[in-house]
Amino acid sequence: MIFFELRMTARILDGNKIRDQIFAELADEIRVLTAADIRPGLAAVLTGDNPASHLYVKSKIAACEQLGIASGLITPPATATTLEMLNLVEGLNRDNQVDGILIQLPLPPQVDTKRVLEAVDPAKDVDGFHPVNLGRLVSGRPGLVACTPAGCMELLRRNEIKIEGANAVVLGRSDIVGKPMALLLMHANATVTICHSKTQNLPEVVRRADILVAAMGKAGFVQADWIRPGATVIDVGTNRVTDPAEAERLFRNFPERMEKFRAKGAALAGDVHPDAVNVAGALTPVPGGVGPMTITMLMSNTVKAARLRRAPAARRAMQPAASPGRAGR
Ligand code: NAP
Image 1: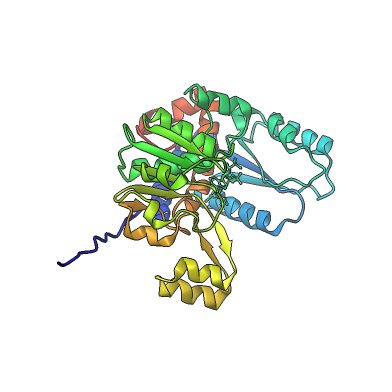
Image 2: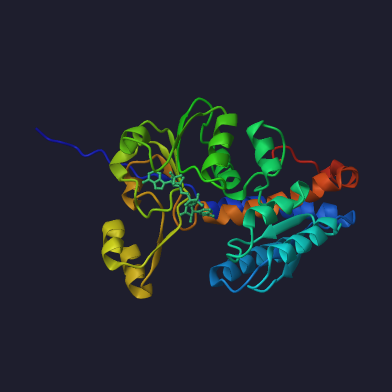
């Protein structure tokens, strides 16, 4: 008897391509708003000297510059107190040129992060972390939605992945990814299961997923044989791998990636084992999938915040150019 091994290669859901589409739409909108004297503005607060935070903020400011969004960088020292941070946020809340306030995390340990995030005016909360915006998301009312889950939804929608009626499994229940992701999928009429570190029989639960969103922070944790053949996999995990044995476990079937790892001594890996590409129907790569969408949705939220906050003038400006179905409405 001859056995055939059924192998498929997943369609790659390219985050860079979707970012370019959304950037083009945003650039048009920003041009119209700016011509009407409403130039969207983002204030980035970068506290202390965390090198990763510096890199993230740099790329967010570069995206603003590319799109014509005004940006300001405020750099409190690593010794900043909660009170100083609260005063700073209060000033930004009052500044009419600032539509979005980005507090780059983590804040230094002596600062009460929750208090600072809750001090941000919900209308300027472009990260979507404020309880008011989370509450709006829970009740399905318009608001500013956390960037990474909003970006995952754009990846699904713009690649025409059917969400309604799908079984969606979300791995992770953090406030910034897992929970809002599950809510967005539920509002889009998926049947949603949320998993966490205490979930029993994880492989079995994952096998039921038509859409799997992995946001655990564990490199290659989800094995290829957990994936339902043809499922859509959104891999949020962004894990830096430096251990050669770990790299071998992940990239053994991907000589080019192994080669790159050897050259650099490090590589990024998602939460889903790369072999899943032979089982899934569609899959986001790491890097180049969800990653580019997070900054994209930050830009989208900033424009949305400008439009909503300065509503009458923005409505007048946008009327001739209104385009239904654009990101982040
Ligand atoms: P987090 O706050 O650490 O949350 C991780 C979640 O995974 C928790 O809910 C945890 O469960 C769950 N978990 C951990 N081990 C598990 C296991 N063995 N089985 C099932 N669930 C498990 O992380 P996060 O901030 O949500 O981020 C998750 C990942 O996404 C990280 O890799 C992060 O770097 C990445 N990320 C990427 C982007 C991007 O732009 N690409 C943006 C944000 C985050 P418990 O609640 O029970 O502890």
